[in-house]
Image (cartoon, rainbow, N blue to C red; front, side, top):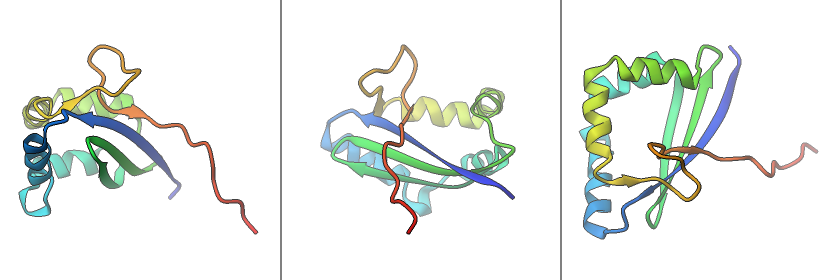
Length: 116
């Protein structure tokens, strides 16, 4: 199966107590099974989120069935995902350059280590 990597950035509200709470929601033992299922059902094979100060970086490995539009449609039809998104907006804010309603922006790859 062919896969590709997608990378996104998002900012958190720069308040230490909110960042700590956001991290707690993303701890393995606190994962909502419905959210994990919705991620996998959309064609996302693997997903990691990294943090630097209040900036988040999400790295996804997706299969050939994945499309952002399809994921958006699936999420809009899933009440549990909508509940999660509403909760996350309490912590997240759009990074610079985002349009109204956007929070996770795709990152542009500018370098890859050349093959030998």
